[in-house]
Amino acid sequence: MRKLLGLLLLVALSGGIFALARFRKDSDGKPILNVAEEVPLTVIVAVPERQEIVQLVQAPGEVEATLEVEIRSEIMARIDEMPVEEGDRVKAGDLLCRLNNDNLLAEVESGEARVRRLQASIADAEADLEQARRDHQRQLRLTEVDATSDKERMDYVTVLKKATAMLDMRKQELIEAECYVKRLKEDLKKTVIESPIDGIVSKLMAKLGEVVVTGTMNNPGTVVMTISDLSKMQVRARVDEVDVPLVKPDQPARIYLQADQQVAIPAKVIRVASKSTKEVGRDVVTFETLLEVMADDPRIRPGMTANVEIEVARKKDAITIPVEAIVHRMRKELPEEIVNKFEAKQSTKDLSERARAAQYIKVVYVLNDDKAQVRLIEPGIADTRLVELEDGVAMDDVVIIGPYRSLDQLKEGRKVSLPDDEKKKLAEAKKRGQQTSEGPHLAEGGDAENPKEAS
Image 1: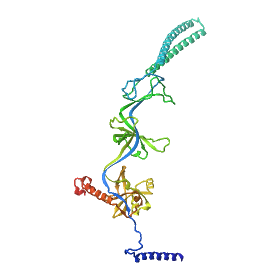
Image 2: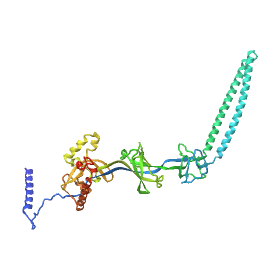
Image 3: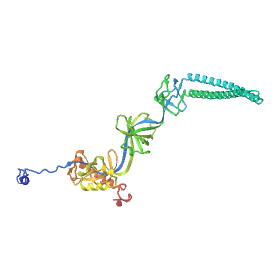
């Protein structure tokens, strides 16, 4: 009963307020009380345009020579001669440095002397073997006439076997000594380091008189210098894991050096790494991507930092709108018609994609009789400013693109208003669109050579 009396009191109070607003007038004849009307949102708009759109993937990278060789010493020695300096141009076979070979020459001479000694030992062993054979043959003849004992005969057999084994041992020692001398002579050749390729000395790490060491398991060894072939250059870029599925070999690209951000250098993708890399202390996952520089530009030098733009998609005649026009709305905030249309499109996708898209829906708002009307869209490729619309917006629509605060408050049927300068821009944009649409190459659904049929 109390609830009923409270409800009647509330209705009576509301009726009294409206009656007071209707019958009591101010001096200007207007009601004293007014029910507040919805304030239109001030928005800015744009019209869809047909134009070429290019989707790019950007990534940082470093310039390097396609062919680059690190010159290291294969022996431990002191540098006695280095006729090149950093920046010098060299050809394959040119002398880069000469190492001290005094110790190796002495070892070669010692090894050759050992070879000669072993050759003499072999001659001596051959003579001993020949004598042992003669003694053995004499014992065999004496055995036939019972002029010797079995013990003496077996002793001479043993002497023959020892002489044969001694000769074989001396021959093996000779082979070992000859191989040792051969290895020494190969090391002697390594004291002269020559350039393996044509290029320039891009980096010089060792100095004249410095002792270079060979690499081991725990020590990489001394790098004497680096030779780079600057006739072919490449960029080693780091593409983010979000963009790497779009990057493919042979895609065109542009390189912007930090030294000159205004001039683009043409390039193309060579390959994309199949395994990611992760920098120590950072959670960013990237994939190493190699790009070949397609121009012979003297500004490009190894070690330079650069930004690359890889063209992953291009459309010549796409319907585009500014990218800021696309907003994400929760399903419960959209009309049932839009949600049903969205569900119909999602039926062709697998469950995981539907689950990811279940919460938010991509839509745009168009201007319709000073009110905002929501449209379900199907976006295509996009660049930094524009996005392609494959479905959802017609060329004669007016799309609301901002400001952000107004976009955030937009609902279906919400009143909106345009500033005077926006009205002027809209009229000019529509005029340009009508002039452009008269061209046969932009007509939809007809023959480009028959404008009447196309329209």
